[in-house]
Length: 346
Image (cartoon, rainbow, N blue to C red; front, side, top):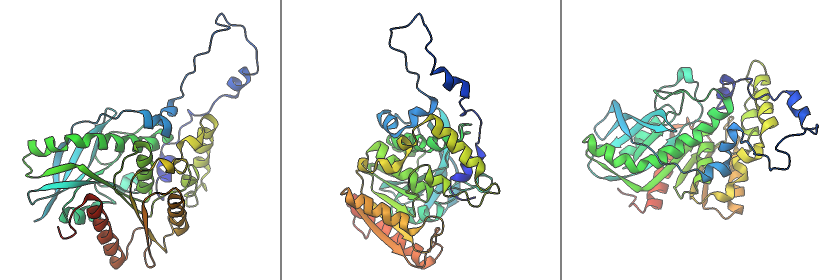
């Protein structure tokens, strides 16, 4: 199944349905001993995830700890790392340069991967290794329900929104990264004043959402990001389901019956973005059509945002053509070094 829509199917539940009888009560005039007083408004469970409410939330972060080494090379090492997000354990992959130094950080978000086929680092590992070889620390969270992370919410929609809070908690935890590096005698330090973001596919949608909610100036590289309005952005991926998307449409319909979807759609908050962006798009991409990125570029330029756009005639969604992939990585490295004020030679 493609992208995050498959994750929505996995979490289908019936708790979002409002009984019709409850709606009928609104039409009745009932006497109450509290008549005349202002009624207390009860917030619905998922209202805390509207972009406006997430923007008001203070993310304090957690400690960062280390797990096993996954790949030990001459110039970098890949290790499991852990942090907590709203009390839930989250694992991920860190790529750490071996040469002593003070390095910028790139936080990386992958696209959708079937949980049954997932292993830590999937979707970010190759680019992360190249970034580490070129003088960056990379951190790629597995997200809840993946790797060694705790389980996500049983509510399919909340599971989606937890990706945003996971990332926002990770960003808030970066202030503790040097403590973790020092305690483990890794021999390098992190320049926590220089933090960038990289996102591919649905990870690009997460990146856009986090840029909006945080208002941060993190230099951001997007590879074929999902950038259309929610919930169209997940309904688009229903054509391969055996039920032709019936179950997914029901989940979305139940959600929209209770909530205003516009408050959860990144396309409504592009004006909140304060970060420079470099956008990469394969022309023969069948998962994220080129016109999506064309529109994203045009909309952000119209708002006066700092964005550069590259297209690749021979590239599909995963940038499988080696020449195009290498060029995209090279451009990404150059973009980060330029924004961080680092000489391109080192």
